[in-house]
Length: 90
Image 1: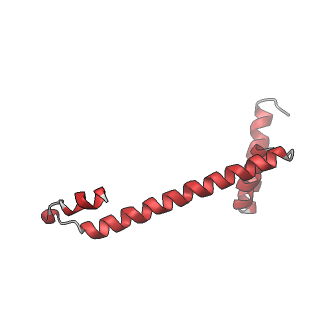
Image 2: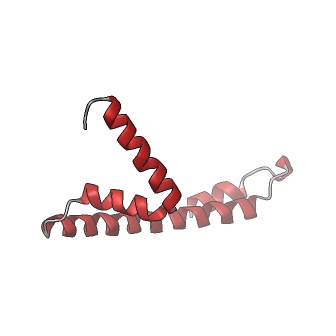
């Protein structure tokens, strides 16, 4: 691999463990590839949901809410209600 050759040419006196650095970079690159694959799968699910008549924007909001604890949800709801009142939206 060309990157490996470049690493072999790196000066040894930099105080950097090039082998370890190379391994870390490669692990991150593999995970980034996996993450891209997962993101594509999630997009496919949202597209499927949309084709079945569901609204992906609302589904995303539901997923965000499910990650929050109930206190955070209640606080956000109260602020949303307050802001809407202040803007004459209710």
